[in-house]
Image (cartoon, rainbow, N blue to C red; front, side, top):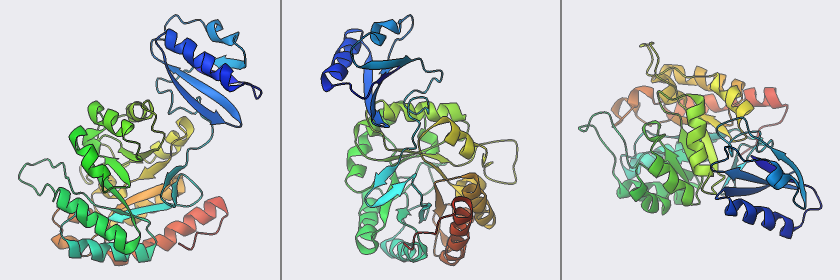
Length: 341
């Protein structure tokens, strides 16, 4: 349920509604849109008569939401959310590029890759210090040493850091190094982790689970939003289907669909979406054409010797050739000139 206030509503009017909701054991989320204050109500709304609020001072309208995800819905907020990370904006007019290897391996590796992707136009360095792997015998990351290397790359290149956090216990540690928490596909429904990053006050990149629906992705985002963290970036990274020629099947439909359903920005991971480096450029172009706000691409200086996911990692040279194509597609769609950054 959403309570929309008129333009003349006072702070006292808004506080009165919040207190009234609390007396009914409902949670509230206050936001601004178009100069008007909105209060979202969450909790046990079954049987609640809208007239409980519609007659209160300052209230213009009371609306019942039709989607199970409330705060993420365009019913709650029509305007697109812009997630600010340092000087970068995800969900704005500029295509955001997040690039780097699957795993942080060595300081030299990360510095080399960071320099390459920065020069090509990326503004985020990605790389896993903690890696959830299907086999316990695979390389599982350098842990805090990897985070320290990422911070060094940021200091040297100016790139913002996006890296994965795997458990609530890691949130405080990763927050000391990362600009954006990444929630991997395997943890999309790790609700304790979603609660923890929701309370941490740091932007979150939330990946769609490999067997999850779009609605389930948005309900996971709702966990983070419900704790007062509005800075959620959704990531389509492919889902499991009967197709075996690619690692996953990238659901390109989800990009425009998510833009219809939610105000949150949407980025695409063509590396996990395909699992094949040869397919990454074409699928990246398709994602931008579909309206993606950004891309999360695995780039490695020596993919054949990568410690993880080398088959889906493109070289720095390939990334450099791809970026102008992506910017050209966005320019064709929006009619704007690309940012020279």
